[in-house]
Image (tube, rainbow, N blue to C red; front, side, top):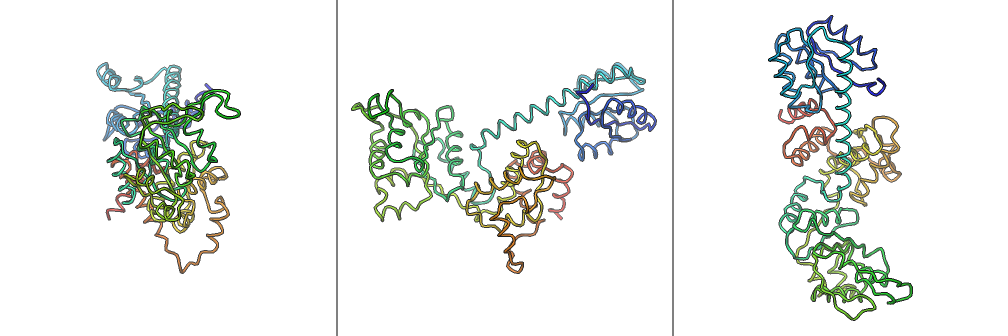
Length: 450
């Protein structure tokens, strides 16, 4: 029975002796046992504890076992329910099983069989947990397609993305380093009618001009020393999909001229070839530079600017959308807790600091900060000591008289409001996103309404 050790079983029975006997038997098998003598107490335990299996009596004063089963089915559908009652009948057994109960025993049960059924129920519960973890990891793998935010600035960006996602027009995404420009580009692609086609990202700042040219346009065998085979370029790879030119302001002038021709003619020429190849793609570009200023300095072509600047999306820096910090923090912490197999919370001092700090590296810096803290944390609470030097030094330099941070309670309310928007009012999803119990969420909501 080692595979079921430490399973948490909730026993619900109004008879105290029955609870004591069954608790003793199951504890010997290695289970952790919780007890409730009525449905209201059981519902509270379900809200506050991580229960794996429920074994409940059917007939009890007040709410009965079937009402508890209905509650569990609605709020915790993955928890198996086993009925154990002295008032059994064929009709009630059929009724329970057909509505999804895991098993139905008549008192006194065959305890050997009960332990076997309980073991199977726990295995089912653990399997569903593993599936949920895998689904979460799959979502994490697609995290770059998701944009997190509920401030007015971000809602405006969501509207822009929705309005132009299916268009062929070129989009220019502007914002500081680390604000999430590629995430916006991916969202434009993966929410569009081109989502099944390639999304090809090219970092224009990461390669010198000669290498970038061959990367974009491809080359023929023998085009230059080392070109031992033909290679297609990124524009061809993006056929019928999207090409994303990240930090286009870094392009050399000669490449800007070639890019302009590609946009005008919708065809490319591989290096070492004189044959024009038609290409069909949707262009999205990003920059952290002021391209108008670069044009005046002679560093960027004005005609290219107007080609890529049909629709412009401006992403505000994190310091200008600080009400999104709780939601971003919760999302990143959930991601890294799953990866590190930890259960962590952010201390109020850290959240205060997050609100005060100017975040020059924007969302990327916040995410890296939380990753570091999640890895280093030894307890259940992330404190200032797990933060990087730049944040700890900033915390040490704070003058209490100049604090502009919002009260912690207001931060909590802002996080809840953001999560409600993100989850479209689904309170179960809100509680899961924020890492709190439904009971705690309802308590906060009542305080917000007071």
